Image 1: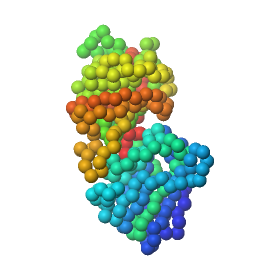
Image 2: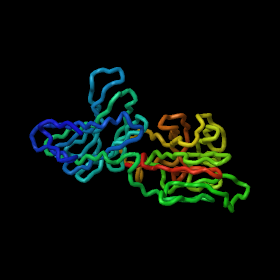
Image 3: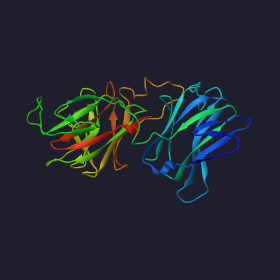
Image 4: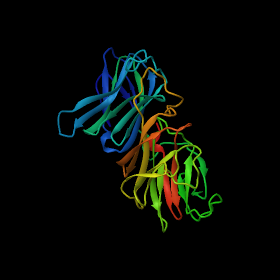
Length: 330
């Protein structure tokens, strides 16, 4: 499963360094092969500090090299910032379409792109006295989530899977002529929870599935992208809608395809604490990107509304989708 040098003691995924010299451990799982994957580190003892990164091989087959994502000092400082890491802190390394984001608790501390790397194996360097609990069990399929529905109209939730949604027949009291409805989820998009996706399970006669972002007051009779404070990628025509207007055309999607939506956050000064759980600031411009089957197909710039953006999906009559928030969970 991994390789440890003679300085690091490995008890399962519990790593300690009782020596007076730095030691390291490299894990066999190749994170360059997964579109959405995450590993976490629980800090048991800071000791004299530690480093987190990858051992990678370039696409051109060159010599493997070490990529440093995070260095924590014995005082808990990161990249020259004030101390933000401590005993019992949780570090998350999340890979989304080759883009790596690193969080200490809920604070974004670094970003890195591994699109030119052929392989990327997690690599930890422990200074004397450090003790870390490493966890690779969190994945796209089994990250626990607690996302609830903020608002929906005419759409049923299919048990036992709480994130499978089906539009049987329109029961829309707000707009009886409508043949489409939407679901707005009660999780503001933040630096930690910045991506979600859906899989098209069934399609109705005039199928149209939408995925995107909207403000909290979005009308549940409207697809994402049809209203001023929203954007969305629609499966039937591949159009990316922004504020009610066509923005660009992307690939269409059918049964079995996976559509994704996320935000790229601007780099922040590590010495400036983020708001709350890292959500963007009202009026800030962010880049919203969309994926089809883990490949990015387009993006659009959006101004963050008051209260932030919320995941929003749209369905037409007869459509069924399964929504996955695990890729955005740390």
